[in-house]
Length: 242
Image 1 (cartoon, rainbow, N blue to C red):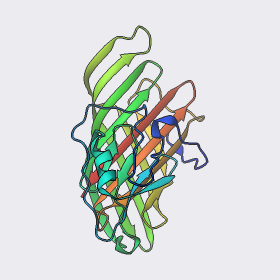
Image 2: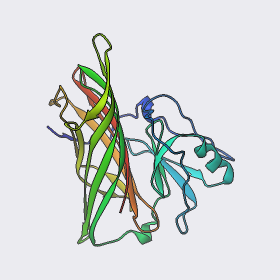
Image 3: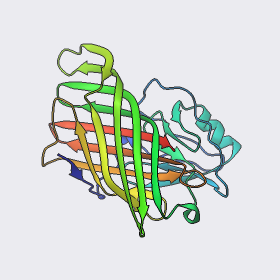
Image 4: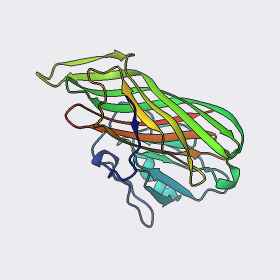
């Protein structure tokens, strides 16, 4: 079953926020570390002065764009689009769309990449997959539906530690009925994890947040965190472009 967002949930260590001052620095920490090339190189959207790093509880940290900042990011492996990227530790970094340039009507389809780590009680998964998203804007309202699937990577048995590399097409993570908050941020909605040995219970809680990136919502990115104590845990990040 899906779980409704609980905005009060604290950020977990896998999405430890970047700290920066002066030339800017990036904390890489532990967490999602998929084998994905290349290092991130972000282009600056018109009028955008800051890179924004977003964690699953929606808390952003802004880092001024300087040659030193970009040099730091270039040393961190990432899965990237043009204006947004998944850093190797699972956070989303990007150049947000200016509020005045966010479309007010239309349906926009995005395709891109996702990473995820999942523990379903039987196996621990470290995965890379695809991401699809549909954003609908009409009558001053918005609706975003995201599906992460097509996963491949490593599966390790919780008991015994046997490891298998392969594709895991039965697994998907969805974020449904999210909406635009605060002009360019994405919030609310419900999250579900499908195709694993465990299914989410009534005790599950989830956090998800994202943003629109590029000159005119050219790209979308977000992070998802699900905790179902003693049953299933999952964290994921995605970036996708029109």
